[in-house]
Length: 361
Image 1 (cartoon, rainbow, N blue to C red):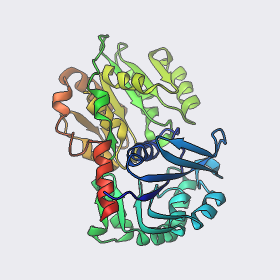
Image 2 (cartoon, rainbow, N blue to C red):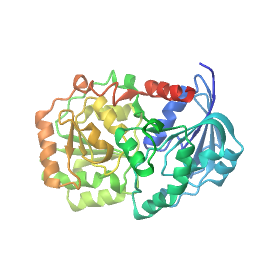
Image 3 (tube, helix red, strand yellow):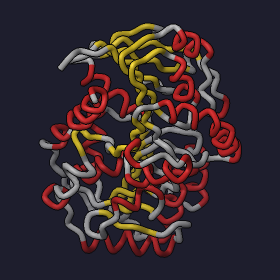
Image 4 (cartoon, rainbow, N blue to C red):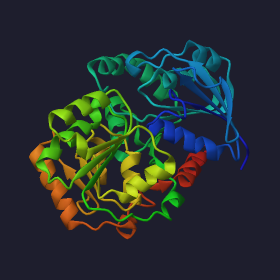
């Protein structure tokens, strides 16, 4: 396979928590083994060097303007793109400006992975989605292929922009399957509920605080993540007198996080919007049953055997009954979750190979 000059464009630095950062980080490290890869990202904290090597790829960070974690506007990145020339430009995340700037580069092929939710997660962000639409449609029209990470996202993009079916392709996010092969569940008193993700209102972590009083005291909640909801969650836990049943983890090592997945009795994500959900994929790969809201792409996980659904808006009594049912009636292990591997759960090596095939078409 001929080596290519590839540019990845992302609004997020590699250290930021979230599906887009993980996606770009994983494909970059694999593509750089065969190709000349450059990555343009924005950096709001200026705590990292402007230029850095990452697993053989050249990372360039550009100062950004992102009030309320929106826009991710970077004039420096826009100017750099106008001077750039690559075989492939692969831009990520419809909901931030770097993707919309990507067509200003010179390229033989433009690929866009949208990570598209269709709406913003606040009134302000929702107004931005509407504002972005003329620019987004221009960028997506210029792209040779638009990649969605789920069938739900593909249909959402088609419904919003009306592109032909052959312009879009579904390639799920990945996991590192080898990371899970040696995991073993540690013995503990049953009743551990795990939630992993950014602590944002739309992710639904508040419901897990509020359902605890409806569950027996042997149920404990572990929340892994950071975000603006953290103080509100802690305050609510104190109001409901369940703070001593909750452990918050700001950031864990990769190995510690994997062990959390394996040790949990139930993984719960009550998000309103997801284009895929890597954390659900990882929990299932670790052999842990999941409960998710029957919304957006999360509905694609629900089989009522390994992943169970609750309606949205969330009813706390129904959620409590579902948690108790799953704990009492499931014994999910890696054998049961094998049906997901190879279809909706891919190894990042497979994801990267599928992308290379598209780059080379």
